[in-house]
Length: 594
Image 1 (cartoon, rainbow, N blue to C red):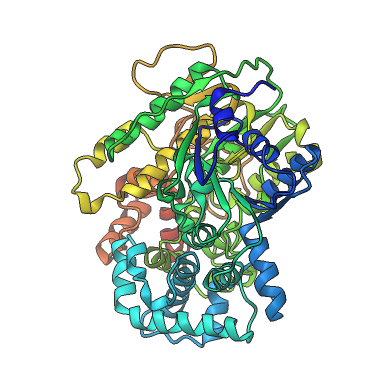
Image 2: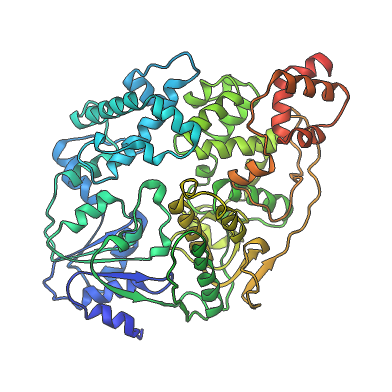
């Protein structure tokens, strides 16, 4: 292929460099050509972001006959240096909250489940430390990572205990008393100040590197090349930092995208202009040279697991002729939290069927109210989303998930899928012919609301990442994009490749009791393109998480006895129908007055 002037400048460069590459700009091709232009006896290390990228890179370098290039991830390097030499055993899935409680014999107080909340924060504190450059846990202030006022108050109260127990758990791993985690051995590798035997080190997807990974990279004597896209940083929740801004290297750019056309490039640039609302923004030029017109692969992309799952529900229940769908990643990962709690566990808690709950943390909760209290003190977004789904769909959930799984095909048959579903995090680095965005991303209107808040109440880094997520989503297409009206820039020119989805009101979901046979029609009292973030559900149901008082219970009892339906009661209280059914069950109103 014919290389651009930007690519040739990079290939012929000398010394340490950083490459800021827009989506679809051929950065892998550029890095391969850079490696080919180095002396044949050069020892070259290519650092990939994850295992799947590593496997693809191994194949591409081999095809070019570049056998002097070693491909690793930061973790695979650390594994060879630390785990092998110390005879450690690794616990791939990490430690669950209840396991940390048991390992450390954590003690609570008179409040319910305090030990579980403490364990959750210990896990996060250790992750924070292992991804940092600090030598000791006490060199960090964990409070800097906690934003919810209730969670922050809890951590402040128990800070010394959380710190001491975090150090204790790390000590147990260090001594080999218990299995170590992936984060732990990478941290130990960083603290050992390794010197790697390479002449050149090429660090891909640098914008999502952790401080610990960067520290290893920067300390090497090799000529260093770091490549990425400043605006594709979407892993700050894993304590990633934008290393392209931290690298004091000669800067090069790749501004031509071979993936999509100029109208999509213009939309991507408009998305990035949203950053004007939160911070100083320097415009980015993107040239779209893509010209694909075929539509073979179609994908629905969402900001959150919740948004994606709800869109999938809508899709499989309304499009009866659809036979094959595919979820990027394991389909089960969309119904399970990282720690192992499943949507079914939360549903069984909702139904007070403790005997069927498998996850120990959920099983320890006496009610959904207790779980929500735990969520508020830990900022556990995944569990919060599961609670939202359970309140919205109740006992329809098993049939819904069954319907989705019956249409889901295996990895080898992905090309047969009539629609692919993915969150942005899972489809990073991928591309599709046509994409449809779920309405759960950041919008200009939301950012304008933020402008009225005081600076200390605005998490600029988080908002910046929200805009990056929308940018990554928009740039996954090779051909066309279907985008909700609420997310379209005002007065953006019409295009044959950009289709705006108008808001359409759907029929209401049939009213059912929580313990009824699941309905086969899963229509909701909602809109076709609705935002599914927890934040927006909280806005719609402004009083959803306020505690029930005796006065409110009396009011609910009177309305129930008067025969007012659940939908109207929910509207009156500003809560979900699921929340009202849950309270009715807790007060035993059906048994007393049904």
